[in-house]
Length: 456
Image (cartoon, rainbow, N blue to C red; front, side, top):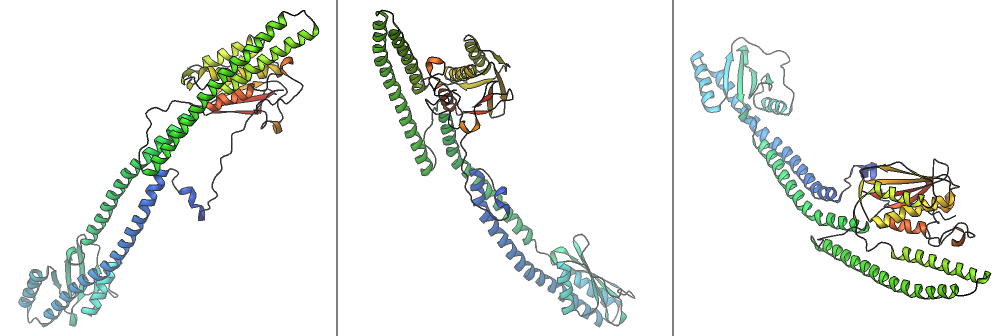
């Protein structure tokens, strides 16, 4: 039995451990991580600067402004306490409006509730502290008025209540807003510059990754040249040198195999002609069979080694390709059913993939009564499923059967239908040259499923 499989290689992952599951929240792309590396220290520095500014600015500036207002109120209370009549009171209140920007009114006979209400908040507490130190009389603070702050002070000897309206500018500095706007604006400018810079640095890496992916899928990498930082240029130059070495080795192998093919076929042809001139006998028939087997084996070896390296990748109708492969195998007597999938175009080497599908179908025909072809389409790849109703392959052998020249049943040689042991190896080589792979699984039909995965 000549069935082969190759499970996709498991990709190793670094076992870097992050505390509290932080890794799941980190960006996955290099661009995102580079931006994070640049932005995080800046944000932390700005947060620390903002906290220090607020702490010092609020504690210093606001306290000074509040104590200045409380001092003005203390002076006015003392002057009002010494005023001899109502005319003097009016003059004092007018003087306060001109000199202090405080709007003061006296409410004779009024009284503050006990205890006097004081608004909550950092500013109200600062004003209250200043009033207790400068004035020393019962008072109330209301900071809920728009653009104004009201301070009510009980006058001595039950003379009433002094109502003071202070504008916001006397108690609050606009530098807080200016500082916040400056911090936010500078951060946004820095982020924009960082994003533009990092995008330009990441672009050459993305182009290099795209070129390597295209070359791995057997596609042409046109107009690619090293660019970007020195390290990226070194990686791009190494990729170009690797591509040249691989292409040179493929060309040398193809030239060598062409010569081997010519050198081997010539003596085999002479041997066959010599055998045809001999009298028929059992020994001659055995030699003729051996020569035929050698010709089949040489063709299989050359097909495996040569591959389809010189064939160009072109847009191919996958449905038409599968129909042609199924028809070719049906001509050999196989029973193949195909669920058509029209309109699916992939970048492929048509001859290589046709050989891949034919080899898989021929392999199914050797060991099963019927085969079924279906196609599953996904956003990034396409799966071609070839199922049969044969005996299948034990799971423990599926990692070995893609090895060249390996037969699970050694008694089955090419002379009795066992093949050369290269059919599935050639198929896998064709699939992998496109950046895909072939997997073997249990089929719902009862036999083996060959899954050909091709990138879109």
